[in-house]
Image 1: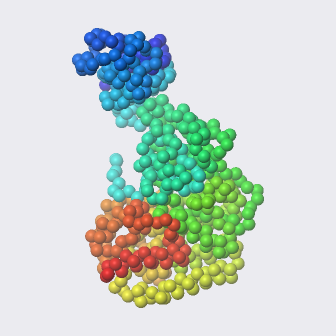
Image 2: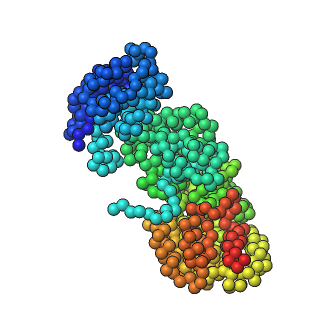
Image 3: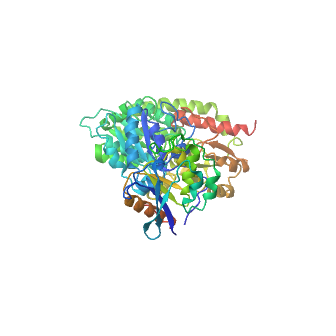
Length: 156
Length: 432
């Protein structure tokens, strides 16, 4: 069955962005193999009404949240969303970003903060925080899903 | 086809972390999912210098399944060495890393030059239960830590017996065996329990022989030590409980170690005199045939099933009904162990069943004619079924819920007396 994977990458080759740093998620679709189908932009922090820039079907939910300026520096993207939710956007900012890719089965970033991990967990989206080439990551992840979806052992 | 096991009496091989815990100042490092240690630990006297289940653990998750967990293992060992003051670090692997193929052995070998020894025992659950895991831990020590010794210490004997914590009486039993061996003029060496640890592990290669008191657990270790360290072994299958078996045991060990016969006999005589003095004093209790049950059943690992069956038949003159061995004994050992059950005094033979399914065991107990109330010695699982048959029940093996044992023991002459006390304490309660 086809599913999607969200990747945080600045160059399209390596998984090199922290979750908080991602401006454009690379969305891969996996069928028999994987291919890049979309670049999904993360809405700018203070612009609550422009979240419909994506085809996310849950946009309505997202915009329900008050997107108060938890982060004063509107362009701050450097430190990502810190462990205690004190980074850009705070807990709500994280939630918004998590919802943006909630149609994906898993997310692959260099680092994913505690807040975000918990939010993904709630939505049963797997988090892989690794620093490897995208291709390697996707090969390993799709191999894994292929095995468990078909009840095959991972024993090598 | 998946099978459900009713009333399981053992844990997965990772349960061998308890064997590591039993070695003073040895620390398990777990390469497993979070929660394994929590599920495997119990409040059975395992806290101490290290807490009972808060060990360094890689806590591997989905990411490590996909991308491998060796990096995490490396950092976990590295940091454990930095922050925890132990004498021996034993890496134990759970199912997940072994299924996905983490080369834990390779990671551990990177720490060859560390100040303290780091060894590795593969204890994935699918490899077997914690009896097997216990063997793996001892194997790891022999294989990765010990070196053959050119010098031997005269009279030094390594004693291997119970699986710590799985067996409630492990500490007391080992100490009692040590005591008996020293009375023969030999020097016992054990690695588990208070004031043993790494200094005793270091002495293992210098021993003249290994003494294994167990029907099957540890036999592979003995063979390994014979090959690698050149230490011969004496495999004594029956846990000696009471006078008959203990005297037999002392004679056999004495013979193997070349102890003068007079010496052995004088030790035996001293013990037997006192033992039979106690028995004699209570002869009226033992001869009153309404007090104790006519037939008994032991539901336990091979170690206790065999030891107690021999004791109750030989020393107390009770008649064995069917006995149940619940430790998933390897198939190739079953026949010789079953043979041991036939070597009872008075021409008695006990039938034994190697069965791990508690439901089937209970059905058999319910359907057997014990010629009166049964006497059942087993795990806590047998309490209810014994109650339903109005029988007498004594909790002697895993799981233990209604017995607290700090260091008492069922081994030797004194162990036999303890067991008599416990059984008759239960039996007389029926009338009082």
